[in-house]
Amino acid sequence: MFNKILKNYISSNLHVTLALWAFCRTIALQQGISIAYSLQLAIVGFGWAAYQYIQIFIPFFIKKITPKPLSFLRFFAAIFLGVFGLMSQPFSVWVVFAFLTFITVLYALPFKSKKGLRFIPALKIFAVALCWTTLATVSLVGLQNELFLLIGLKALLWMVVLILPFEIRDMHKDASSLKTIPQLLGKQQTKLFGFLLVTVLAVLATKTVMYTPLLWAELVTLVILALALFGMHSKRNIYYTSLWIEAIPVLWLVLSITAVILF
Image (tube, rainbow, N blue to C red; front, side):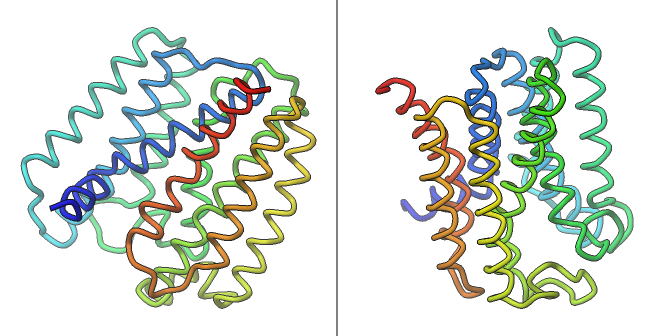
């Protein structure tokens, strides 16, 4: 019974949406910025809707798999939350979300098989990372340009490393034409690439986080991320990636809030 509930929770995309929200909150918290509740609602709503789009409409149009009515209900509920959150946002934020909607649609075009950004060799991981990075930095536009660019680079690399375990998991399932990073480099070299990026992220953390407790919270989370990548292989069960690894941004937020409270 518990396993069924857990699988339904994961398949509903609520878990990955929670991870997205936590990632955005943590990036803002490091700069002492509190994201408006309405913007948080927009991030959650449209983030959830994007994952529902990929999970529901792509199989429906390409594989003729009819989704359950509950799936459509979740999708339109997510759209409602997103639009409601955007109602009080300036036009510039609407433009950002319109751009991300465009990228999401291009990620996997629903009317033709094997069309869209995710089918362009080696591009899939960066398309997803770009969307998360944009949402994580949309509230930071008031920062100095150099700092903003460093934070954006850090968020992008964070997402690349976070996605690598999923690419390793799917390296034998994905079509060889996709040329994902594990398909190009192999499993071990992909892990080494990830460890190199974690090292770069640790350096970027020292440049973008001025409050020492928050810096330590990020460094600890990066160690956990590196260990998760180290323990990844193609036969890991769904809980290792879709539950535990996707929970790392949530853990990062919890550690960051704890650091602020205690220190």
